[in-house]
Image (cartoon, rainbow, N blue to C red; front, side, top):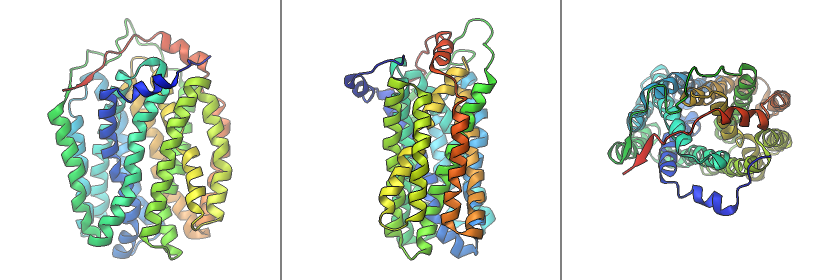
Length: 408
């Protein structure tokens, strides 16, 4: 039976200062991919692109970020996370240049460079978050940390609608300030102690083998979820603009969807601590099906409601699969974070151009409804996720993790 956590226990998580600090960094670094969808209409107009081609910008950013994360996770396991502040500065500086790019190729290259900084932050942050989270609150605490990134993505469209409405594409220059300031604050106020040899999870003797089939199911579920979520986030602004809506409408709509996903993330984390991860993941997948159909078939003001339902159900399982992977890969928490956050999310980047191709050929409604087939396949895959008993068995073999990060 899953551990019961009372209300006071959940509230105590919010007073975990290292966790909240890491969540602030996660919020900042994920603001940048949140800006991309609002930038798409400007890129289309400036460079004469179609939906499939403009989706390559998402592939450049998210693909570079995702593919680099397993490496940075492995690096964090062995050398620590001293460069966590610099990753924010790098991301901000690279993204600031996207709007000044003279060609689409250079814009995509700068997006890829920004993705590299994001790719470094995510396993660094997730590794340290796992180190400061109390075991009985692991799911809800990791959900709170991940929600920092969700809020960053949610703020991105609002910030982009404001900046790009007044400054056009050169408005990306002003986006340097959040990452620069928070990154410098990290460098000044946060200290990362060197991790002990072998990573922060000290395991006596040889590391146990990784259960490949359960891990493949975990990564597969994350891949499917990210495809659906990235497709929705990427094309809502362009879809609504094609129907005659302005940025003043679709910017808040995109933010509503993402904020709803933050609520779902924390809610599912709390439920998973009570009832188990696998049951919560399968329940969220089932809820996603009617939400997607309603959102695709009934665009307009009602999209704020149906889009919120999609957000609540589609993004809520990410932290649960992250915790599963960390516990399955005993002694390799950084690498596990890189695999789930990296390889898992890269399918979202690959899926965006595919969704765009379907939308170009058959319309956005059909492209979004096609996600239902993906969800149905994912429900079958979720049945292969490791049981709570298996997770507890592996977790019992892990030693306590000493926090690798503190605050001044």
